[in-house]
Image (cartoon, rainbow over all chains, first blue to last red; front, side):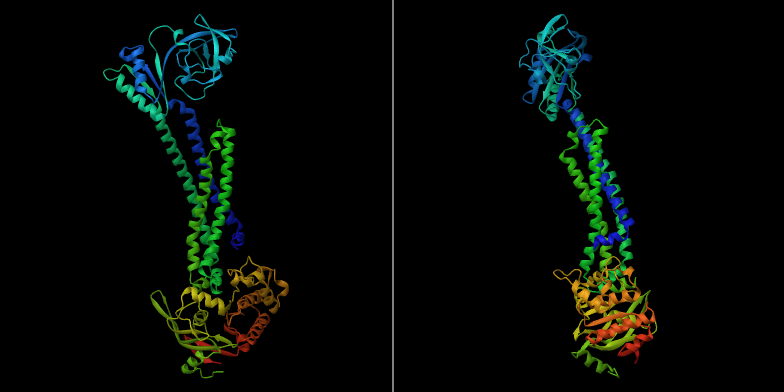
Length: 367
Length: 239
């Protein structure tokens, strides 16, 4: 019955359904896009948030971190993470496949910061070189190859994974050597790998409090608080996008309201006849609401499908992986937009339906 | 029949068993633009079972109001409406809807068929929301009774005016009512078609159903058992 009534004015019905479709599509796709944006940003920026970089404060005339400083930082870190002291330099790296300039790090415990793609990173790094993915690629190095850094020869014991996240200590173009490879008793920086972003913030606060109590001896660099701000920004952006989409659905709702109002007005006499021949108010109401719901379900369904297709299309036109598109929260946006669409339809169908059903049969018949 | 139609006689008749529907000193007033219009000013009327009554009168005389009251579509300002001896004046919307469905069939001047439905579906409209009841067989039977056996699957725009009105008559009979109310049933039909419709009404009356027709059409009065004329809200003449 409801289907046939909708079939009576196909163009108007199609326009109303199109309105819902666009509204649902807008909500679902903008929601998903925002979500994808936030998720991929999180994936890219995730690394920074967990790290605290402590460097000597050159403005205060300190050029290096002493062993005492490193110990103090390690104590401040406590059980929230692991502090890794690094000496760093730039150097010419030579191998049989050629030579290149690269970052040279010297540390005893590289395993905390880096992950090996081939070979193993020892708990205590005493001999051999660990090379970053780009250098390994450039000089065609693999585990067992020989390289020469600043006049000393090393055997490659591990090749690192290519790191895509933005990180203050980027291993891609670096060679990690044992601590003794770069001379001296001081360190250039301490990288604290914290267990979480919140732990990183806490560690940074403690390092500042303990080492900079009397003078600014070290600069502490941590991005977890910045990351929080970034996340907040993305959730704001997301809500903003949803707001815009919501407006379009409200517009669709108004058009459905109009369609329902016009079609019930047009059929006033018919409704009067239905009431006269003994059909109850509730049944009239039900038919009219079924029409509205049908509009919502059809429009919403195709809107959600279109939004899903658009989200998948996003993978092909932008550097975004399927992993951030096929997540439960995106499905939730689709479902949510669909439900919201049907809901809007019911709401805007309810008043005209109620009005028509409760009209006195006499008035309805009079037209 | 009841030639004098004195109030007392009507009241007695209204309570009698073979009275289909009756109005007892019914008045109806409308408020329009601050002015009270008295559409019916104390009307007594009793319609017997199987009687064909026609109501005539100039426009504005209260004919439609009377039909609405008889059809339980409206409530009187004062007075009593009795349906088969039962006082239905004070019924609520649900009960009145049910009473309409059980006892009263409607035929309108403009037919008011649903354009999306076929003839047989239109006939079953009053039973549309009855669960566990398929009135299709009865609808087909009614359609063949009004001579439309070969038009059951046509939609209203494929039917002529007379055919549409016959579908409407079949629809009014689907619930086996005691009373059929017709508002200008021949108003949109030519003379010959109108005559076939009126013959249809006569046959309905022979089956024990009362037919009350509001009309301008002289032809209707020829077929009716009794004609009352309404002028300015009162029954003026009984023919």
